Amino acid sequence: MPKILVTGGTGYIGSHTVVELLEEGMEVVIIDNLSNSEREVLHGIAAITGTEPHFEEVDLRDRNATYGVFDLHPDIEAIIHFAAFKAVGESVEKPLDYYENNLLSLIHLLEAMNKFKVDNLVFSSSCTVYGEPDVLPVTESAALKKAGSPYGNTKKISEDILQDTMRSLKGKGVISLRYFNPIGAHPSAKIGELPLGTPNNLVPFITQTAAGIRESLSIFGDDYNTPDGSAIRDYINVVDLALAHVKAIRRLLDQKQLSAFEVFNLGTGKGLSVFEIIKAFEKTTGEKLNYKVVGRREGDIEKVYADTSYANSELGWRAEKGIEETLQSAWNWEMNIRSKNKRT
Ligand code: NAD
Ligand code: UDP
Image (cartoon, rainbow, N blue to C red):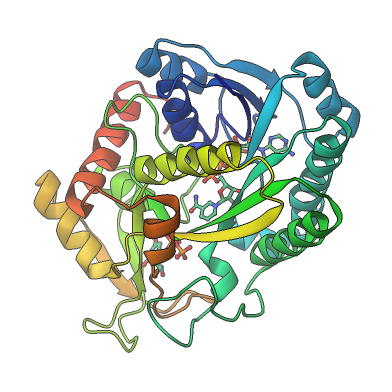
């Protein structure tokens, strides 16, 4: 069974992907510096799968330490690179931290791929590269827009770096996965999203408000050109998303001489408004949510949702889980961490 290196593997999407890789019988090595996750996540992964992945607490900005992991595991066949800083607002405040962390980490991994002869990489990109798309649903061939934040720009630049590197290296394959809005948690509620401090994203804010940790959800704008006036996104279940990574790894490993850079949209293909998410959450959980409409959030776009036909046909993947099941999983996870009193 192939050995896969997962950077950022104790993080939100990484941990769910590690679970699915282990369930497939693959061996997993995690690199994470725990800057936005906790070591305890490893116990959650082990509780679900019965297997403990290898864990290396390494900062990818440290080239020698990164090389050290490849020395320790010379049989790594593929990499899934999740590790990055991801807070849009913080990236505006601290752009250099974002460029340094997100770009240097990627460069060190590409150097390691060259040095240690690893041929396959799956990269975490984002629909943020499309900005406000001209045509919906948005396809992979849509024009990329100027990034709305330094964070978004690191994704755009990373894709450029990957494309340029692939041109210069023969026999390597890279798949860039452009995520829409990942939400929810593993159905076991043993792993999920653990935002530090006040969440920026909609669903963690909803679950924390329903749990009484936040007083009220602010809806950022009800004057958009959408049926109910609130903004529209494509919310994708994190387990569905994780399963797409298993498909991407299989595709790379099955076609050893791929020598290509491929891009896939990962979403449901369906756009939902903020009000629709609130309604679905209230319906499935029976919880009543306090909310108020406030002004638009700077930098937000009006609507985006994915054309997923390329991932459907080429990757053999599609999102399976419905929005209510997904929001219920987010709520179950919230209840679980609240009962463990991990966060105040
Ligand atoms: P996350 O913060 O939960 O996970 C990222 C992990 O990387 C964390 O565990 C963190 O400790 C680790 N990390 C960060 N910098 C590191 C470094 N220099 N060395 C080692 N480890 C480091 O984030 P996530 O939501 O799981 O996102 C994973 C990836 O998906 C990121 O690249 C993110 O930009 C991308 N993405 C996320 C979303 C989203 O909404 N969550 C949407 C689109 C794209
Ligand atoms: N949103 C909101 N209130 C919040 C957080 C988010 O109304 O407290 C809205 C936001 O304006 C956007 C949608 O919810 O329309 C999804 O936002 P999120 O930050 O989760 O993801 P984004 O698409 O901005 O990356």
